[in-house]
Image 1: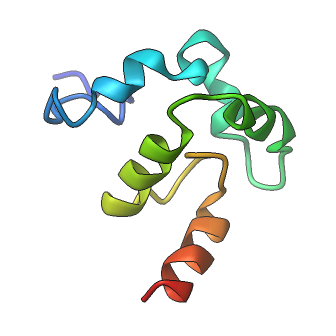
Image 2 (image 1 turned 180 degrees about the vertical axis):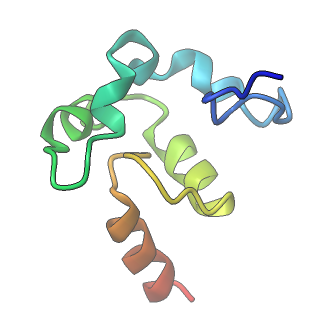
Length: 86
């Protein structure tokens, strides 16, 4: 049995259609999941230019993504955002 690392696998195709237009799909995925203490600068730079940044962030917030850069925000930044809007 294999385990996929693709966070989108098995999701609703209509809900995930934005990912086909995501700039991160054209870059090194490792940049979006840095080691603890690693730089997030490259991933956030890509996100700033991405047309689906808001959809990506919405997805991460709705699915409580705990790892990686989503919509230009780290897990800590997403937690703060959720607390402010709670």
